[in-house]
Length: 254
Ligand code: NAD
Image (cartoon, rainbow, N blue to C red; front, top):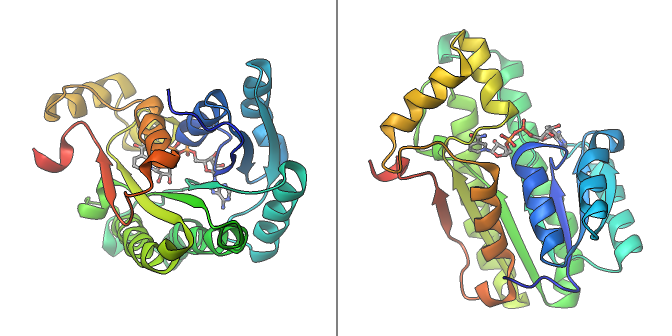
């Protein structure tokens, strides 16, 4: 198994879903993990699961779109664990609507969390990484970057994350820092279950419908994304940078 012994990782949006699974996976691999979500209270379950399994983690309450929150969270993590080697920009929200019904607030909220959040966390983290001449930054994009009805805001933000990752890969590469994106396809989490409920479709039926359209004939699990994030976080992945790794059961090639 990939070894992250001695590494310090920060995972945003890690109270639940894909972020929680990445945090637990990194801790199992030996990293000490900053589990960041909107409020420290929300991180309790993920932190407890890591500690119960013998790992080390702290909960950090911060809104990734708030500069002060982000700076304080990164500072606290560095003080607590003495560095920062791996960042996963995973925090996310959806405000789906067809374009003609999309409000400015739907647009601004999605841009703030995904794009501004990824920018602020990466900018804070790279200061420490550049000094240490080492870093792994993993930004969670989506197959929606390729286009998805009802998600003009989310699709634009997730495509933006890919451009941001490519450019920061160029700027930070000389300092031993890689930057890559993961593009998950449909993963069964509270985010996607909420979408099914909003559409008035029973969750199981929606999962089965989506699975039937995919080459691998199943929807994704958080662990599918966490396994890819573990590969990209490894020291051995140091020649992989500026890439988008779609983890989507074949959605992007079907
Ligand atoms: P989720 O809704 O289950 O979890 C998202 C987490 O982010 C929550 O804990 C939430 O509190 C946190 N969060 C939201 N806004 C935040 C903010 N401003 N600051 C800090 N934390 C914040 O979602 P998920 O399905 O686990 O998705 C995780 C990531 O993967 C997101 O970026 C999402 O866009 C992306 N993604 C998900 C899927 C999918 O099918 N589930 C597919 C492609 C991409």
